[in-house]
Picture (cartoon, rainbow, N blue to C red):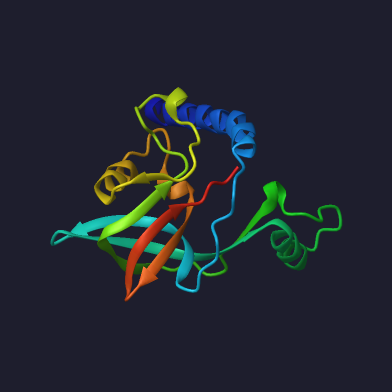
Length: 171
């Protein structure tokens, strides 16, 4: 019981930290991830290493921002009192899937927010931080301050392999 209460308190503190850094995000001029034909938005539900190769288990989603998010939100929610997507984005995930994708050894990984030091106050937004795949694996495994499973990612896929992973910041 103490551990779950501590974890809940930790998550609340992180949410508070994230809320106070939203102003930083807007002053650093957040830019949406550009669309590409070989790119999929997804949640990464699992990261596994087998025979020295990295595999992601992903659940594809539809990610919308700005006016497009508002349009899809109005179509799907049909709430006359809410006409815009909260926080400027909208996620559609009508069917939960578990798709396994291999990751290229030299995959590029760009993160917006992660646990740098194990201290809550150091979990700050810094746009498109390039980390190597091994560091991403370690970051993904650490879920006590920032859990990577909370975030959608944009995955670039070439020849059936993930070659680029971009964490999507969500306010």
